[in-house]
Image: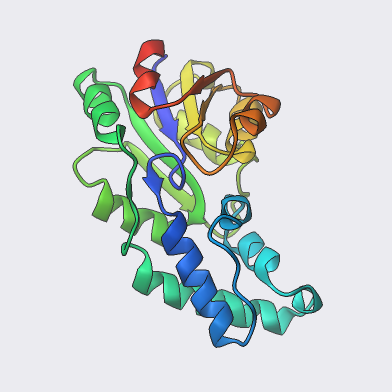
Length: 215
């Protein structure tokens, strides 16, 4: 193993409540019903556009104007609320400190919009040096497409077969498989261990420092 690529939401950071609060505020503003916080465990992970489509009322899901209004409102609300409750998971500091001590390169790949990904990493994970931090950008396919993961490997001049990809959803496990990386399922995140195994996890870890057993 030569490097580790981490997903962000549900893996390094518990962002669920800020995401849910922001989207529910946007929905309420536009006169649409909010959703439970738990339901957002399954709404998030596939990028902002997919999140917006999933939370819209059924009779509004085909409306491009409704989509645009909610997307804009969500971006505004999340820019205000993103760090109200979001924090690194317990054990993340221990893991990142030890990977740093061992001089193992670390990177982040998220389906969150790149501007938010960069800002949140700077604000909440500033004490660690990530070689590459990459969020979703126009004309770049989202995970589980392997393009961005392979691009990170290339920029680090490493073979994808020597990289661990750590994430908490089916999307992350599929990304690892598609990129030829070792898929590490984080069971403390937004989804179940069953989902992770069914989508290609090579190993499951219950706490962030558990990754060190494989290093």
